[in-house]
Picture 1: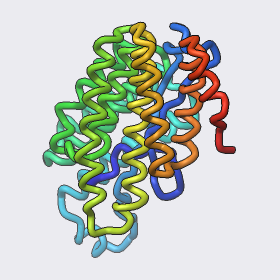
Picture 2: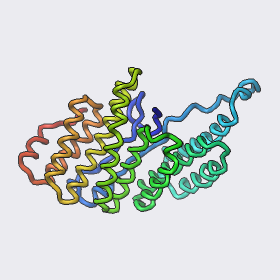
Picture 3: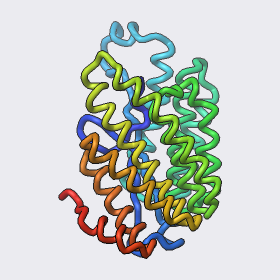
Picture 4: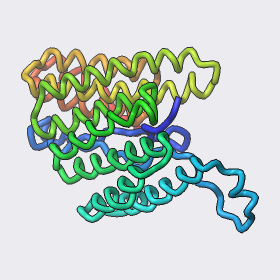
Length: 285
């Protein structure tokens, strides 16, 4: 199983995580501010550059092509991580990575960097609140996912959550609900596979990451239910997310996301019992 969906989560597991602005109890403005930042995924190390011809000779043509595409992609990714996502950066992804990837000779590097570059463009559009463009970018990369990173990779259900985030920004609540339900369901076989793995790392750290990422999608679904006026469904769903966090002792970041969203949903619901319940649930500092 790959780890291409990973971003900033821990020194070991890099996770794509939600950044939720809930100060106004999930008002339309607050929902529009929600952006999931997805920095560069964990990529294979670039071939080491040495003067020795023998080192290069051991690389296959496909590895050489992958290395060149990775070098172009990472140069722009580093710039994006250090600054605002400008129109110039979006254009550089298109002209320096996508055009190069489209001309690639090998199928895996081609699909890999079309996936990564267009995902980064989608995140750029999210940060700029260009939600329709973001949704279009995230939908485009679905064509590349079966080749790289694979539909068994966590990036696949995460991308459905990215689509939902863009749909929420456009207040397309029914579409966002369907995207999130798809995201949640796709995590289930990945969790089962991780639990049955013979590798301890996959059974523990990786499994916890997948569960946490699924919890993020569940929490977002609760927000959508609230915005659809389905208050009880929203409360039930965020309670399910919290139960998963506690049952599997997920990382503090997942715990805190759920608690913040739960407090906001309960406040917006005007359900006094739910408000008392969530008031007693604290963030982990």
